[in-house]
Image 1 (cartoon, helix red, strand yellow):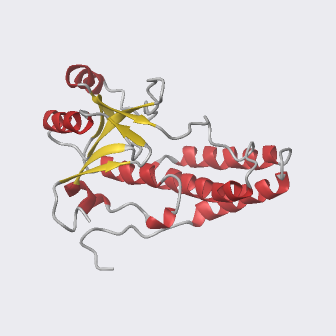
Image 2 (cartoon, rainbow, N blue to C red; image 1 turned 30 degrees about the horizontal axis):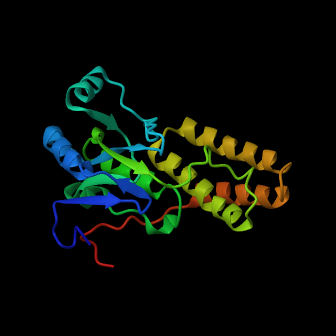
Length: 220
């Protein structure tokens, strides 16, 4: 909608995000400091004030860390769509979020594509509290709800797709073996055979999953 209407920037907020009075102001301030960027994410905290979106994909170049120290901006390769300012021009090159993901990982794939067009950042002074439930590592092994078990298919499929598209071959192999191991471990859990089949289905689907990326100027 934003790109169709010709807006230059969009602020995407999760429905479980608790916004502070200066959250957007600090994102705009950060945007003026960064000049060239594809997205700037707020710093996400839990109810106790702990930093929960500290990125694993931080570009640890000295220049990048120095810029973060001076401007309160941390370069990142991807971000969650909890509170994030997106530069619309990057979407024309990277494309829109993939609808066929259905659930899980669509934000990581989307922002990874954005970060390939221009740098992505976390703005330390723009904070937001995530009010959703945080249960640690998301794993099918401990799951008791059959419906949620079924949704893990999308989690596994989409993560393998993300590895295929955005990571090195060795990472793809590691992810496949991780989920094979998960399928074996899940056999000893509640409804283990059912969970194991979901894992295997997710692995196979992830190897062949090739959804179309839609671009804003593309006719549907």
